[in-house]
Length: 213
Image (cartoon, rainbow, N blue to C red):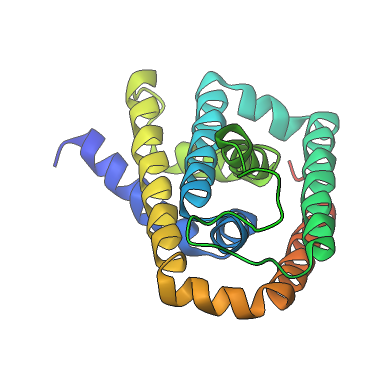
């Protein structure tokens, strides 16, 4: 096997487990599917995948190492992420019951969620999480050879981001099937409260994350 293919296979073997582990990204896609609709959930999925490329890019450029070594930079990113997750959680708790129509638009809202808003929700949820800094630094330094060209490393990132987007798109389609939407309709109030607590919980978990050298 070509060494580059072996590196990619090794990266994907590790990353495939990270994709399915429940976290703030999955919670965001689930909530978007429930309260906004399929289009919005898919756009949020692409936002998350784009943020992953953001992490991969600065890791390749060496900025990831700087962030991992700087307590100040780490804490700035961490507390911005905490504030964002807690804010989304509070918004969910205040939302109450939402009546959904076939288009996925919430009755009573002035307009559907814009494409930029849906994309931004996913991008910010992932980009403001400092944990990927250590994740990508560790797997790239462990699996990828030092002399592997930067363009190949960037290609690895594209494959990983594509896999992440594909996974969340599948989740989005499943959660927005008519039967699932009907179930969400009946339990939307409770779901909003639970998802709000989940986001706040992830925010508090992130707040407790300590910088490690």
